[in-house]
Each structure stands twice: as C-alpha cells, then as structure tokens.
Length: 332
Ligand code: SD4
Image (cartoon, rainbow, N blue to C red; front, side):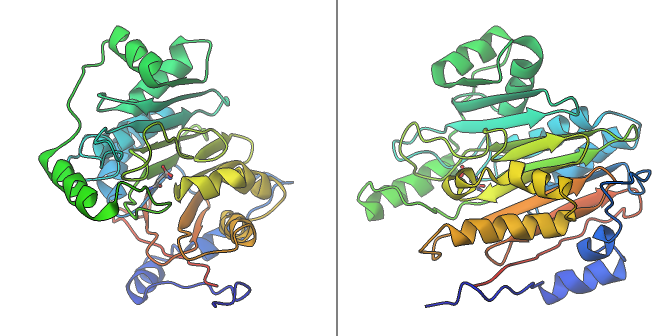
C-alpha cells in the first residue's frame, strides 16, 4: 500500500522549466502574502483556470480584463468558451452524458460582493454559467436545479440545444457495452473548468462549470455548482476552485477551506496543499481519489495542488503573454 504520509511536491520537467524561465512559479509568487498588512495588488489583472484547455478560455477572459473589464464578466465570458467547445467532453456542449445518455450540467459563479448563483442538473442549455449568473442577478435565490432551472433559462431567452454530440454518444454506447450500467466514482473525464480572476479594480470573481462525472447516476450533482465546494470567493482574502472527484471535494467544503486557510495567513499554494491533505486524510482508499485545487489571493498570488499528477493550471497575467502550466502534486 502506498504511504499516505509522504507528501512530495512534484512538477513535470517541462512545466517546471517553463515556470522558471518565466519567473512565475507559485512558490515564488506566494512569499509575500500578508493578511495583516495589505499591500497593493502587484499582479493584477490576472486570470487563472484549471487544465490546459483553459488557455482558450483565459484568452477570452483576458480580452476583458486587459481593457479594464470586471472579473465577473471575465470569468463568465472565459468559461463560456469551454462550455461551447464540442471537443471538451466534460463541460457543456459535447460533455459525456449520465448512464442514461442525458447530458446534465452543473455550474456556479461568484462575485466580489459574495453574491453567487448556481444551476445544477440542468439539461439542454449550452452555457449554464450564464444561467447561473442570471440566477445570481435576477432572482432572490442562489441555486436552481433540473426542470426549474431549465424553465428559468428558457424564460430568460436561452435556447434549447442538443448537447449530446455524436462523439459523446458513441463513447457512452461503448461504455454501456462494458460497464454493466454501473456508475463509478471516478470516470476520469476531467477538464471541468474552474476560473478565477482579479481585475484592475482589485476585485475577485470565479466561475466553475462541468458536465460532471461521465455515466453518473441520473440526478447526480457534484461539487462544481456548490458554492464553498467547487468554488468560493471572498474579496477580502482570495478565491479558490476545485476539479476532480466532487464527492471528495464536498466532504471538506474544499474551496471554502482553501480561502479560509488563506485568511489565516497561508499562501495560495500552502492553502491548496493543506486542503488536499485534508481530503487524503478523510479517505481510506486513495486509488480513485483525484482532486485538484486552484487558488488566487487578493494580491494576485496564485497556487495549485492536486492528489494526482496531471493537474495543469493555465494562467494569463499582465507579465506573461504566454500561458504556463503548473503541476503540483501531493503523492502518498
Ligand atoms: C464533478 N468536479 O462533477 C466535477 C468533475 C470534474 O474535471 O472536476 N471533472 O465531480
């Protein structure tokens, strides 16, 4: 059995050298975090997101931020790119369906005033993040789910769309042949996008959107639409988001914990690592445990950590026109 106590910070050779070349590693960036004596944001505007595919999303977000736009607009417009990408099989259009062949989406958004909106178990709408924003801005509620969320979206002018692409349908049909119709905890279709941004005004916002675990039970909702689990923003401190096995993230209120740890003085990197350790401590069997966190503090420092190799962070800030990948993995 693997030793759970051996925590090693790893990076792929490629990503480490890239980070060094650009003088922009999380650990370098995190040294100045001072909760008690706020310093002006040195690293703004900035946008970061989970996984490599976030690069296209970050570009869309960056177009807004660099022109003085708000972090809220940036994260919404950014993740919409991924939602509308039929090649991404774990978000929006083209997402892998549940075990009954239904594509059901979860998303949430949060702004610098701690307002938030979410949709869960939403079908037929390509951009659930924008429905989540409408929930935030145009209802007295935080979350709408299922039929109610769909009715609301249609009332707000969203268009009913078939989200099950031929490619996703074929994958599902193949799964049906081999699986005996049994969902698994970790179907390994990652690429859920979580995005965090800090704008010129020094305001933070975040967004998280997914089609969830592939071939899940119909009705299953993960961490991604749950404020405090898949995403959390506190403008006094920082923001965090999660990717991976939602059931594990929910058990420790993952993103809220990362932000709270930053409030207590941890750097974004340290906070992500601590949250990952907590999850590992709560699970006897780590074999299928894949979870990653991304964090951005009020000053533009960022960090990421995961329990498995391969969690990549796409980043765009005012210094780095190129996007970099970071990969910090806690191993056991
Ligand atoms: C979920 N956290 O539904 C999501 C899945 C995920 O990359 O992050 N995939 O549990």
